Image (tube, rainbow, N blue to C red; front, side, top):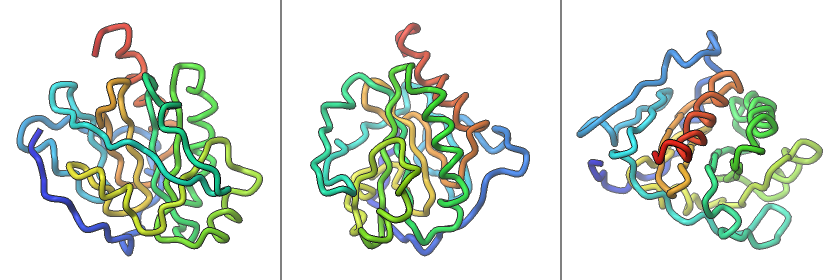
Length: 194
């Protein structure tokens, strides 16, 4: 996969909402030199041969506990970048929870990454609705670790395959209808050796 220079994380681009058609019409498969370019509002599924390594997800959970990255070993991991002040992030929260509930028995884990936010605001945002952990990363350091596919706008959702490679990038708010089939596709690669 073409390696891009680290992208400065600019969260002022909180834009976009769930697709009006609820489908995958904006999802495309990119190969070769195009694989590293994912514009805000776009979705990309990378062929297995074009996937780059995801960084280790580690840090502090919103409640102050330490996150154990070993809990993700061998799992498909859905990583969602969000902030409490981001309206599209609020719009997609229930959609993410629905996708989580529908796929957790497939060896899938979700991890939220709260960025450019205050801890109290972030905790208030997830109170009573959080089904999976969110790491507190106000400085955006975790996002910078995704050098090839840096989520430079929020919301952004990435799907990491069982081998720890970025398989899908969605730089927009997502719906369960769009996200769940992509998760199932990546989770199904285990049986096919993907």
